[in-house]
Length: 460
Image (tube, rainbow, N blue to C red; front, side, top):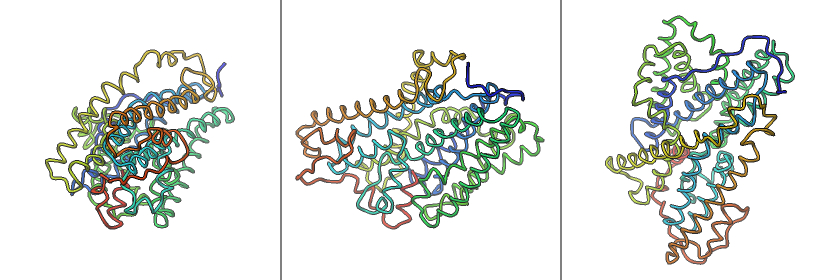
């Protein structure tokens, strides 16, 4: 028997693949990358992360809501297994590659900092880590982390630790007839409280508000609410959909062009990109119309397919690439670095993401529809297995770093004891201090002065 609460009302429809959603992902990742690459006319490209939050909330919630209304249950283990296959493989490759590069090329101090950041990122707690660093993080005594952009992945995964469980609880304790009403109230309450907290906290503590899951939950809830009414959206008049499509695209462009590092964010200003993304998703519910047709172009759809890999690779390449090209990159140097990002992303998508996602040994459990997952206690890849997988990732990364140290044993940029790096990677204390002087190869990345520039660097 499954965890079934009964389902007397028609289930919400299963979400069909949408080309415009992939195009919206492409637009979001392009805004983020061009902003971080210092394209002068796109200083507000960091709002692409907010677009990702809305899209993610919409897609994931549509899957969960269909399941809970069709079966009265949420297969928690199945859900987390799919998330693990989707998120972990490419993220693992990026984190390990970043650690190895640091061990080979950077100073002792920098290696210690990076592996510590990698450890937090691997457990999807990077936003907590960087928020804890607080104002010191933006001071000149610590360079920008090459894995800082993992904060947004952490926000998403923290939201998804709560959302499916909450849906399951509602399905178990509320009659099927009133389940969607309760879910609607919960989402609306989350949306309102989170937005209010974001508006209140942003001027008082910009760093904490930027990285906080509590101030970003309303953005994911926006997508969830859209999924909740998704079956009603195709009924909108075509003229209304045209208007929504145009306003949504204009809203994203205005935010990306007019916002910059001095803009208090998120707060109420995040409403513009969030509602813009929601408008585009709503407009395309019954097919592409108006300005939304641009999002269905084949090149954009492919960029949307590889958007996750693009997001993972772009920041380490730009930050660590400063060792070779410095902070003031020429246009050609920027083009070269972005080409490297694209090449790595294509390889990551085709050689890592897709093969793991379609690996039969990992997907076999999904075909067993009659086996309900009870809070992660059943299924092929449950919470405990995911945790062990993450620990294995850290162990392998530590071994690779130690191996890199042995290869470069004559290089005095690394600690003399490889265990020092391993301790930082999997332990809870700093490595033994080294007496030799170190040279920070990322000094160029920290050369920008002024609070505005430093805040902009935080928006990875």
